[in-house]
Image 1 (cartoon, rainbow over the protein chains, first blue to last red):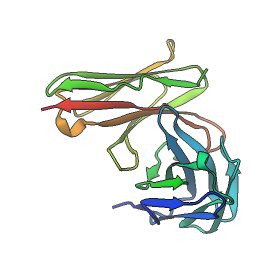
Image 2 (cartoon, chains in turn cyan, yellow):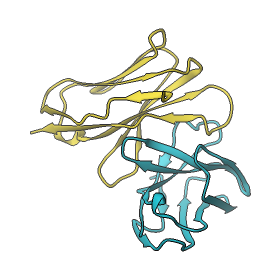
Image 3 (cartoon, each protein chain N blue to C red):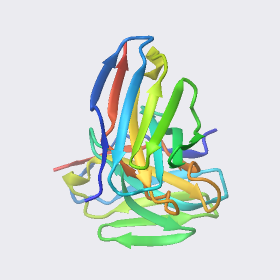
Length: 113
Length: 113
């Protein structure tokens, strides 16, 4: 059974803190993605990675960075958390030629106070 | 104007009803059309995908694409309470990078027993 896991289901952080969200997939997928999901706005792509150490900005990269040191692991970093980054964060992975079929993790509900 | 528009609902139907979920889009380069299902407190999962125009059937689910009208639909026959979820349409062009997966904002469906 394919699996994408995320380090936390719920997270509460203070404004200005550095926040790390971790994602691990066990399917040997080349592509990994970070989205945020907000009511009425759907899923918006923050960053994606198509290979180890390779990354590309999505639609809303401001205030975020990513790291992919190993194929199975993709981290999202909020350098200085702000209240407008309160959201549901979803990680996904897919095969290189099959990005229409993405496998999602359960999500991390981040609240920044 | 968003590239992909989806009626957010909520949509509430009795068990056994036929459900129709729809999305419209503006980018004529979209070639892959997907429907993802997202249960409460879970990540989305791919339900069906269609390449280019036409219909595709899988059990009680039928996906329909009308490229001339830039309109896609998902029909659920004999709906069950277990179909209660948020349904997200997603679209992709046939070329370019993996980032070109564009999601609708989702329609929340409740099937009442």
